[in-house]
Length: 433
Image (cartoon, rainbow, N blue to C red; front, side, top):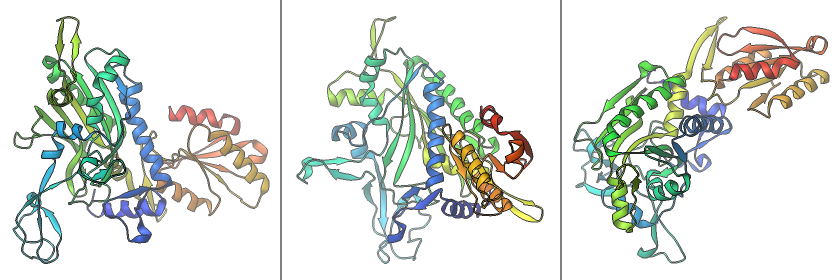
């Protein structure tokens, strides 16, 4: 996409109710966003598609929803308390703060002023638990969802009776006090993750690592992202996290360039061993074949919901000319689109037509999101629905009262068919399947 298309997406998101600036009436809160009526539908559909692919379509992965707040020792074991830090510098003139590793010159990129010496800055948000706000009551908002999975390894293993290899998946909020933010919802301080921790025998880890690279790349392609705008990038040795045996990023060609959409890492046995050491509880799997306890290796596909939403929006955005007028279209995949069907009465001053249109809406809305709109001419209504990605527009007209048929218009082709009202629901259900 062109660079300025980020501005078009940002504008569309606010105008049509996808994403709003948080606390906008108070001047906004930097890099924190609210999802509007259409945005929450799109976001939920992305999460639903991920959950279905990870949980419902497999028998080797279980779901989890762990808490945002965890015992402080969990973050000591993971290394976040001591290692989850960036080197930051402050401008002596304008007082703004920057990550040292992102600066091209040794001066302030905003005003050209002199910079302080680098200082370590922990990215975790602190809060307090209980009634006393002192050092002993300090806890953190989680910076990732993975640790909640690791500390529940034995609980899930015992309750589900899984054998290796098996996975634990969850979707949840995480928080990082990012200094360098921007590019809309690409990098936020409050964000949502979709993470799978897949536990394997050590000797099988490489095989499953390659398997999940392919699976995760294809998930995005199957949901409509153009394969030419996706790539796998392997981390160099000096990029790898201290625990990682290997790591690849699935990168998308965002307007600001190739950037991470999802990471897939072979975490080795670091996490379970660390939590075993600090908690005193053995997080192991008893292997019936070898009659020995195994500390599994972990393959971790970890993606951001917000980044996925942004990529799907950018990928689906189209501008076309139709009969001399600009047509803006979100060609979202049918599983992701916020509104499946819009019902549009041709004459809002005819009570019989309006009543019939409402009856159709009520018949359809039990299964998916349906919109009713009679606030403009039919041409404008079509353009409005195209811009938010609605798959099918159903028009109720004067003839519908006599022939019991409606006109259905397809988003991508703009072609129209005349269909019996009694067959409409099954027709749409078959299309969506």
